[in-house]
Structure formats: C-alpha cells, structure tokens
Image 1 (spheres, rainbow, N blue to C red):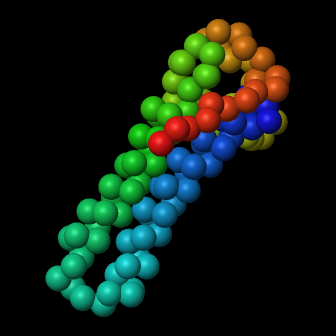
Image 2: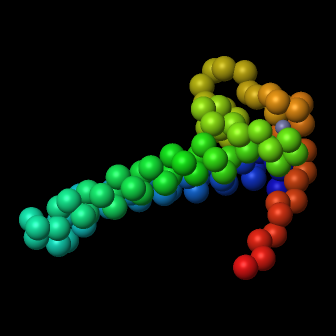
Length: 107
Ligand SMILES: [Zn+2]
C-alpha cells in the first residue's frame, strides 16, 4: 500500500459516510411513511452528511507531518481531470507514491 492508497481509502470513508447520510433521508422517509418522524429523520441525515465532511476535514491528513489536507484531500487521493497530479505532501514534501504501512488500530 502506498501513502496515496491510504489517503484514498480515508477519502472514500468520508464520502461513504456523507452519501449514506444523504441517501438516508429519502430512504428512511420512504420506508417509515410516518409524517411525525420527519424532523428526527432529517436530523440524522444532516448529521450523517456533517460527520462525513468532518471526517474529510479532520481525519485525512499526512501521516508524517499530521497536516490536514482539507480541500485538497480529494485531489491528492484521486487526481481528477487534466491538472498535474500532486506527487508530494504540500506541507512536508513526503512522496505520496512511496510504500506506506498504515497504523494498526487497537481497540
Ligand atoms: Zn506531510
């Protein structure tokens, strides 16, 4: 696994949380069918989207210098379009395509 693969996985987790929150609103409304639950369902849907955004802002960071990538996380992870690909951490210069062993979590 490279450092970019690790960052890509972190970005995917953030987007998955956001999409689950965004899709959770219409799905839960369609499944429940009760008008009284709409504010609670909307709250959890918006909360899901906000948790996904917070994940992207707080959790996607350089493992070496701990700088948060924030707005550029998606570009670093995927490199969309014709723009030049980001090859190094913009904060410490660490090469993004070098092998990287992600930390193991201990519960
Ligand atoms: Zn860095």
